[in-house]
Image (tube, rainbow, N blue to C red; front, top):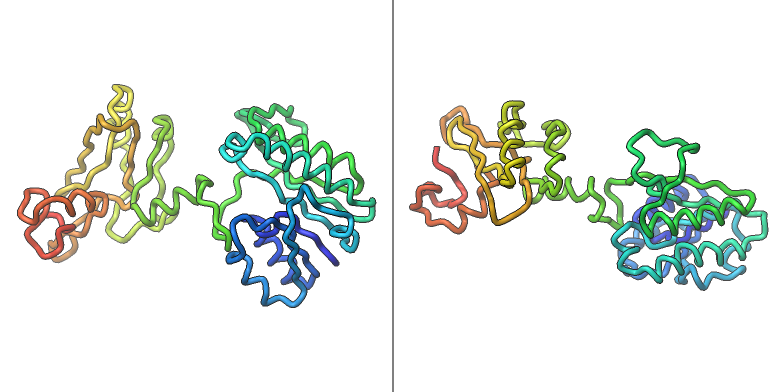
Length: 302
């Protein structure tokens, strides 16, 4: 089949194009390439791929005529981006969809990328019969585009939830991706909502915690919640020996929970590195009480 993917150089588009090419379809990637070409270069290893640099608002009938299916992913995605570019969000998410549909003649199948954001804050499991209550500009424009697409036949709309995972064109603004990146690089997660501490902490097998690390215990949580109710944001600091310390940070309104866990001693009695105190120890003197006098200032005393 001949397939057109609008927004094909984006987070979802590149993975979709790759999957279609792997199945032997002929794929045309239409994108304005506002973030450059580097992420899409790997697709050149497929002989059935072609690229069209064009804004969705300027699409023409000739760009669509030879295709059997159109995957419409082009648009401004996410609440922050739409709020920062309100005019563009309306012109692209709604106007661009309308322009694309005007170029289709009823022979092509329209596959529209919608979003579950159109349901608003429901608090229950959503189905296709759940009332639509878009509460943001992003949700409003995507729902308008969905209604336009459903007036065309044949068409289908997919209401995506938050998509996450590794892709050639990464999006680090998505919460799962952001949490994983910070857990790996910074060994900690920042929670801006104190109620988020009521949920069960991440498990080691879910986060890839190092051997010797431990999870938050149930008896840690009440102590954390009491301090949060008192308006004292907390930071999980490294422990010495078998004692875990929670220190108040009045200068910040965040709750920092260590995912590198609290270091434990090895079988030889030498302490493991506690990366959640790494920045402090780098600034401290080697002879200070917080760091040992070893050659590596990151190593903590036992």
